[in-house]
Image 1: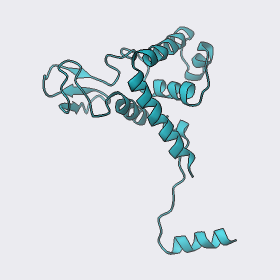
Image 2: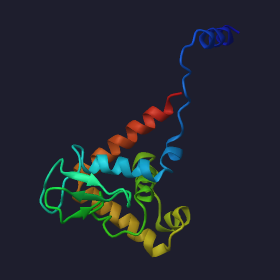
Image 3: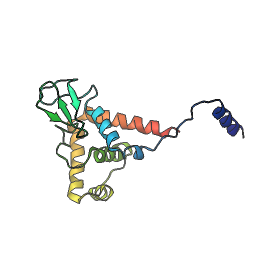
Image 4: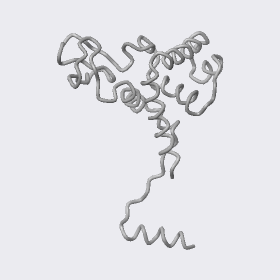
Length: 161
């Protein structure tokens, strides 16, 4: 009873209502959110041109989400997956971020057949996905560490209600 009275008093006084946080899995369903998370992990200080190395000289292409162009060299279009093991993958970044979250954050080791069923891809694609994630972990530990930190922080904030 005390809690209900407190809640009523709080509503009457005009205090902002605390919004219940969405679960992390629901947050990671958004392609834009996952792309932003991956871009923050790849470029913590903003996009860097892989051609000329220019920082803070990038602009987003409005016609193709996730694609950047360099204003300095004017000859390079790139995305957050360019130059990584995820380059030329036909899967959206959201699938990769969700798979990383499942395996490394939720500590659920998945087999290729489980990945195949969960993400609706062929078995060989699932094997390739697992190999690419392992290769990214070994060759880009700083970036994957930042991705892990972002996802753990997201999970911690989503766990609060």
